[in-house]
Image (cartoon, rainbow, N blue to C red):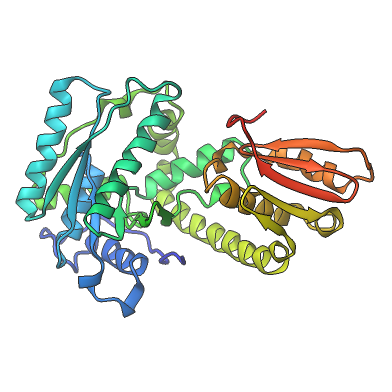
Length: 355
């Protein structure tokens, strides 16, 4: 889906939050673009807002509540913090929904008893719960409060890992997930803009102290690197978000070309994808990257993109392109490439972690 082109958002002098307010208008424009464009009536854009009670999702709720029908506001209650903080956040979101005249729904999830990365487990369970709520209420869109600063942080994190255009495309403004579409209409404004929206709407959002933990890479970038970058250019976040849109346009165009000119040669089965080696050997590395991602979409149901890295892809492409006829196996995150003299057969990995 094409992204809305952005202009830098200045601090607004208008002290009343309306649909034409310079902080609300770009969010509503992007929301409409991501929910069907100009041919869709607002009545057909039913949206669920994932609201934590923090300033970003509170600002999103305040803006989308300016239109009719009003959004449903959902709060996911997890067990990672004390009961007092959990209850505080839940009650804050319930109050926000009531003041905005929106329906409120809460959904508990349990994370503490799960093994593995806690942050990843919480994010997965949260989106699963939001999708269940949206499907149960026949709501096609879930909106989150990601903004331009989040986009810049993501781009910098990906850049530090050696990302290419796909990584520099950052947070996607829309993606399909379990029968609904997750949208990010606030990528055109900053965190400071979100706080200003909260002030205009008369809300005092809660503060999540985990965002202060600078042992986490994202928080170090947020508190140490971004302030220095804003000193160089106060509009750096919105400029970065526009650059991410440009990268995404290039990536989407490459995906379309690969689907049309390369993927059509694949022999596709539910548990495998096969090419002749000659069909892929002559392709550029960027095109092969997309082939691998398409294979993940087919075999691993879009799970595991974050396990891919440029070095493993480079290693795999070199094996595919060399003159050896010896059978070899390469693992790329959730997929396995079995390479013979004449064929490349891609299957799902039985081990989810990359080698």
